[in-house]
Image (spheres, rainbow, N blue to C red):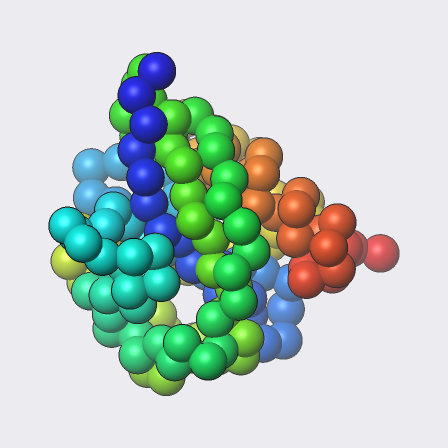
Length: 149
């Protein structure tokens, strides 16, 4: 199985138990914002660049916490595994309108989705295994996400 290395970002809604997720053009899977590093770029620089390219956000590195590195089947590339270095953004990043999320580059759709429980996958909309199976359970276990009552 081929590995795809990415950086990903967890942004939580300031008032609801929801995560910001994006869907790339010509796909059906929602995932955390992020992407692949450019040559010589470390994981933090990658997520700062990708958040700006995809969502127009200006991330302050002081507000980023490294959650860890997680691996799962790639959502949009059969026969591949995604290995994601995942960061959590404390607070609302500069440039994010929580009521009307702007998106650009290859992102076709962005929105807030509940994380506990996450919505079921349907033929029209799925959620990336990295988020569903690895990141959300790790964040719930650590207390970074609040479980539903």
